[in-house]
Length: 152
Image (cartoon, rainbow, N blue to C red; front, top):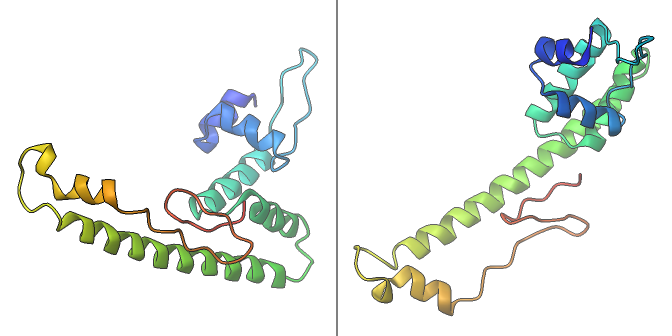
């Protein structure tokens, strides 16, 4: 099947398929004499596996580890357990940070109890006066705008 057929079969955009190939998650398929990529059912299965992992917010490195284990079914699955355990820790940390963010936003929201002129808005006033709350991150982690910690 051609890449468009693979995209349809796996409900994945063509550009995402190409990205996964460049990232080394999906092996580049053989090409036809006219230089078209030729995919098979194994590519569909692998792509569905990758998409399921991405739906669980697993990083590309975590997916690589799981794919390597998938490719060696005779190996011990302890490493898969370790990947999921570490990911669970990341999710728990993210939940804690999101709850902290929610509390900060609620506190900010009570600063303005009724609509009015922007110059009288307590929210705008507090945002002008307060320093942003620091993102909490364990050593070695990276944070984005919501303080989410996850190694990618």
